[in-house]
Length: 106
View 1 (cartoon, helix red, strand yellow):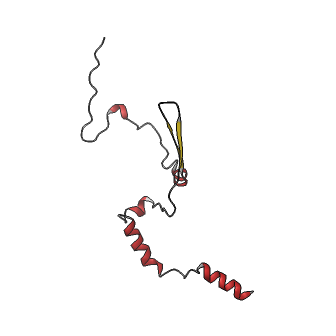
View 2: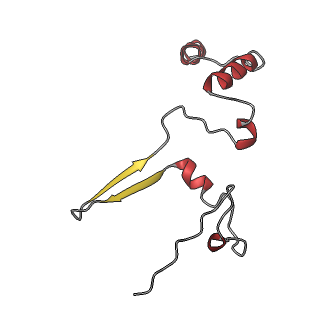
View 3: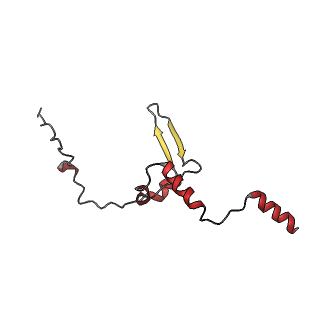
């Protein structure tokens, strides 16, 4: 039986030669839109059964693009910034105001 020498270890965060992807062309963001919409997770169990679960973002979840994310450390920072902009938006009518206006015009 031939003895296989130990695999070389990468140092200083460099990739080993056998992991060279320079000749490959990847498509950045290929599944971006699909992932934002949700995805199906299928787990095959050892007993032959499988678990299938549809994963979607919780209601109210907002995903920030990477360039915007650089400026906000967390949800609190985003909410603070948006609250500062709310006064610049035109007032929204509430459901009650829509109903009252419709009743007056009838």
